Length: 393
Image (cartoon, rainbow, N blue to C red; front, side):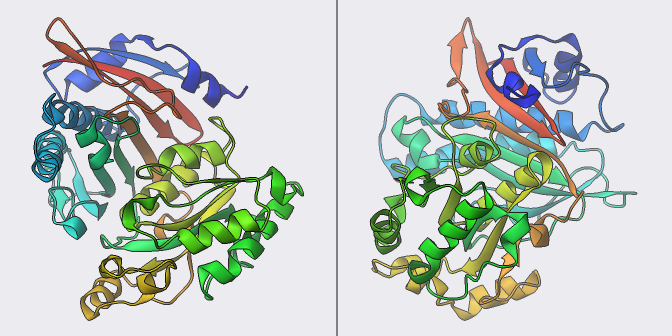
């Protein structure tokens, strides 16, 4: 078992150092428990403690989103808007205190006309700073899960320097070893090349047979688009095609591909949210740089079509093409994870439990004597810390 795995499965203990760090940004915090994959929990990595404020912001978002769901289901659309709105307000109230300049390069919300972070948004106190930070945020990834009281929802936040911005669209992506990424042709219809790509990835990762592979694709929540792709993989002999139900939350599967959680994942293939893909690329760059995503942009407006294939998701509206051009991307071009997160540009990624994550061994929030406990993970370069943040309700 690796040191990172030890951190994932260990029980966090009270940490005076972490408690002081998080209380500096959130006065409602009463205590923080932590266990790291490195013995030194040490001093903040920077004078302004960007990692501390990231943890504080994502823990606050997770708590606010969970509390906003409440016990009464009510109208699900109104409930989802309340969840996203409260989580956004909680996170941004903390992130606005960032001591340096922070620009959002990927955020979830505008594409679905919901509250959330958005591309180009500026947070932080310093308009002119010696260093400009890049932020990737999805304050509740799994708003539907939260509204329905189902496990899997996470508050996601990442920091880097020099990350590329992405619009709140989608991307067709394949998770692969860096060693063969430039050999993978994803220009043809996914249903035509998916099996060939999976076979190439299996060969590079130790010569596994197709029947031994575990491949994650998209859930059915966006409609029938992935039906043919799933059938091709299953009929082609892939051992297990994982179709998350009811929605997909990508980070746990990324960590499974990195070998940090079980069950094993050999690859991911499908159309995912662009901001979520940017976050996944950041996590890989920090903890498993031997893997990357090969991707091409996909349309969000294409979801209005009804199709058993992914074809409509590569038909872009003029406005979507303009959004891509604004960040230097073209609609029918192959890109790699390093185009979003260049080598060495990642700094930290945080994942906090909104409704619990069985894959990441994160418990759902709990209430006790007027406090709420939120579990999460902080991923730094080659290092992982499990945290429990306890704060007044």
